[in-house]
Amino acid sequence: MELQAIYQTLGVSPEVFAYGEAALERLRDRFADIDRTAEYNQAKVLRAMQQNRVNATHFAATTGYGYDDEGRDNLERVYAAVFHTEAALVRPQITCGTHALAVALSANLLPGDELLSPVGAPYDTLEEVIGIRPSKCSLREYGVTYQQADLLPGGGFDYEAIRSRINERTKLITIQRSKGYATRPSFSVAGIGELIAFCKSVKPDVKVMVDNCYGEFVETREPSDLGADMVVGSLIKNPGGGLAPIGGYICGTKECVERCAYRLSAPGLGQEVGANLGLMPAFYQGLFLAPTVTAGALKGAVFAANLYEGLGFACVPNAAEERHDIIQAVTLGSREAMLAFCRGIQAAAPVDSYVTPEPWAMPGYDSEVVMAAGAFVQGSSIELSADGPIRPPYAVYFQGGLTWQHAKLGILMSLQKLAEAGLAKLPE
Ligand SMILES: *Cc1c(COP(=O)(O)O)cnc(C)c1O
Image 1 (spheres, rainbow, N blue to C red):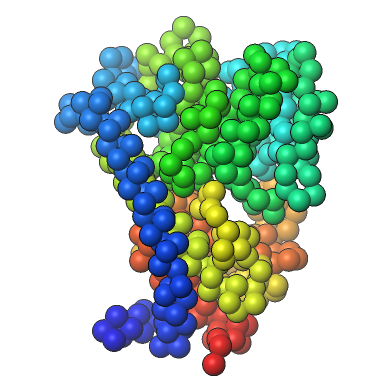
Image 2 (spheres, rainbow, N blue to C red):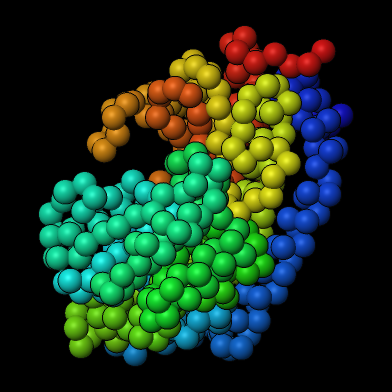
């Protein structure tokens, strides 16, 4: 009862709290599975740190050129050990996930080469990187062409279409693990492994890059365990564990990663330069926390799907489905319901809890977007956040939560706001 009382001081009514507790009762086995995955991944990260003899000297700040930055170099060895790759590039100079992906693509594609996405359209921000939407400095401007094989209506891989689009110029294949803000399913690591094997059976020397954003540590294996030449992601998502304030990573073969380093800094300089600016403690400790932080976010996503599906709202993935990333889409059906949901997430935040999210026109979107985020790191989406374009079917995309307990509060508050506005009816 004390627990319910403190929730009440935060704005959660006894009815909403009780509805949440009833849903939780049914999730014990799911949560136990998530904890086991976290335990495995925690061990994997610890082993990588122990093997590489992480010690206090690795936390020292460097400035300027950053020559002989042992903390930085060792962090890259730790990442390579976690992802089971030959090499890794993990840098604060990689400003975000899109930047990491742009570096990986532009470093490994030359004029005349072709890029293929066998999983339909890539993430919004990559459209300008590739040149699907014309942009300055796009791959297309540099003479790199692009092809895409769409998914089958049911979300499966269209192997015949993929085979027909692989040609003598196909140099790199890009696979996005998470659905991002699309409605297709996210892919399991096993599924990605099958797709990689198929592509390499058609063309053995083709390289495969996986956009790993939001997928890290959701399963015990990563796409690099199943043949990906590069896995790429953002440190203000899963692998930064909420502590990294900036950064991106590219793990992969020596050949691919070396090219990425040359592209990121300069030909000839590569990984030798790039001061760590005092960020090593956050990068190491964030990686250490990442498996359990990801588990907390996953529990939040599963809890949200169970709560909302029980009230008649469609959820992707649904309440029972296996998870391959931390994103939860909830179809709320109206503008008002989207705003109420986001007000609840915002009200539950440790930072900026008192502000009201308002929809606004964002560059690159054809409708208004509403966002709720009260994060320690601005824009961090491993922290509890929700957003969505205000248009039919009026779905919010919800993700993150540095602790399961905070994710739970956020979801309960979102439901509270919907219930108060008469937009969701709790069962009697
Ligand atoms: C977030 C994300 C990106 C881009 O990352 P930013 O850090 O926002 O630039 C790319 N792909 C996927 C699947 C993502 O989720």
